[in-house]
Amino acid sequence: MKPESEKFFEVLKLLRKSKPLLASTEDIESGVIKRITKTNYNGLSSSQIIDFLFGWVYIGWVRRTLITASIVLVMVFIYQQSIILKRIDVLSRQPVVISKESTLSPADEIEKLLIVYKNSGRIFPSKTITISEREMKELLESVNELQIKYRDLKKLIEEDPELKKMIEKKLMENNRTKINL
Amino acid sequence: MIDLQLIEECKGGNFNNFRKLVELTSPFAFSVAFRMLGNEDQAKDVVQDTMVTIWQKLKKIKTAEVYKTWIYRIVVNKCYDQMRKRKRNPEFIADEHTWELIANKLSEGPSAALENGETAKIITILTERLSSKQKAVFVLSDLEGMSNDEISEITGISKSAVKANLYHARKNISEKAGKFL
Image (tube, rainbow over all chains, first blue to last red; front, top):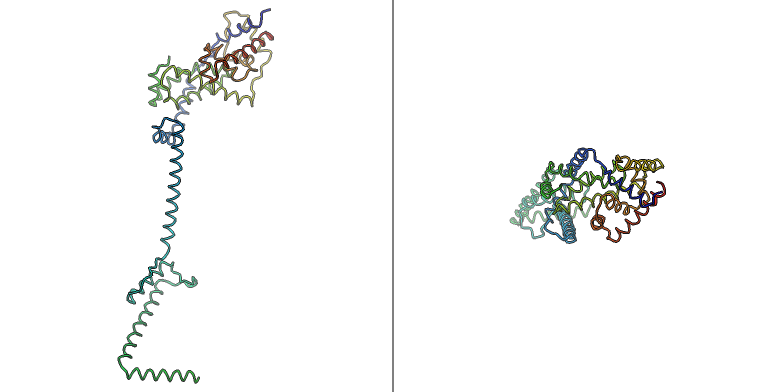
């Protein structure tokens, strides 16, 4: 009967002598090349960009910190830009009214009113009536025309005292009739 | 023989040179993987995974000597992963026929040689009770003929731990050999 150690060394000798044989490396080669080309295609961008940007940093933790800091900065930048764009969008939708004393002619007033009307989304302040741009323009023009006629009439009356008296008298009579009625 | 020139050429991304590197590296990577796992298909998978990892990290290699140690380290780590997976799904259960096979082969004398399938069975039955580390140390030391310093570098465990693991592995296998042969 052989001792344990002798049996162990015999088995060991047998195993050492029988080195495992790889029948063909072609399967492994083709499998590896296939996986490499796939990996290259998928993971090209992220690793190469990081190497390109931070390849000059050799200390691991410094590189990681830099990558993290740059990601945070980019995210903050994107967030700020989105907020700014949102604000610009909101402001561009609002009508701008500069409060100053009006020195414009009645025709300019109409244009101004029309601009305000256009920017306000073609809706009146009450937000109950919606009219077309053409109708609005006609309305404002007629108001303007009426104002001009009223001004001319007033001027004529003031220039002629007799006419003024007559009109005043007529108006008083009218008032009396109204009271009588 | 793997020289630094071939490694340098592969760093440039040349697939033909890398095929040559795979052809030269695969046999000894397969030998270690096969002896650790006792399974040809799994050993081939480990070799393939190893070569893909090598391709991805080839730029870090500065000398040909470092390359060999580095490959062994990758193979051993990938074998650990495989063993961990296998613990959940054990495939091969050794039986008394394997001991008969060993006894027959030993009786054949110095001319006896094992085929891959036989080697797989014998290694599996001898090392089934060993831990992953003990298995790695036993294969690298007693079957691949490496020194304790090299094993320590490859496995990342201290020299004293290498010695301790090797002692326990040898003791376990000797006991088995004494009991069943």
